[in-house]
Length: 121
Image 1 (cartoon, rainbow, N blue to C red):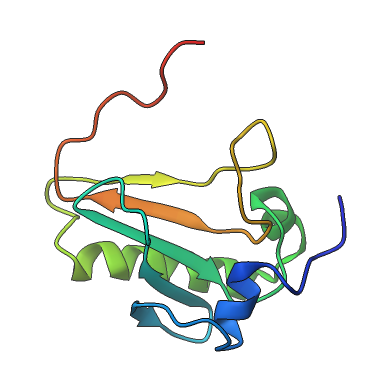
Image 2 (cartoon, rainbow, N blue to C red; image 1 turned 180 degrees about the vertical axis):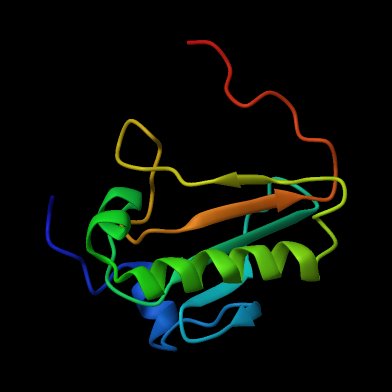
């Protein structure tokens, strides 16, 4: 796994160098609106820490950070009224998974029925 890039956009957002439209923040996570939403509600949730991917986060983050991060995701879904009708939670990982920013993050999408998970090909 390559070393963490301190200049990736999410690292810079966490440091306050780049603004975002914050919807939630606590000791474990920062959540904000995606600038290119793919659903009526499209929120990015990033852990506070230097984690490159889902694998890195799962293998190296302390249990308290992992639990705190996923509690934040649950709270954000609840706060935005997504729990009742459902939502999609996506973590793109690595080149083949379509990960564009080398900082672990999840996409929380909802507010409408979302189509098929992946298309063929």
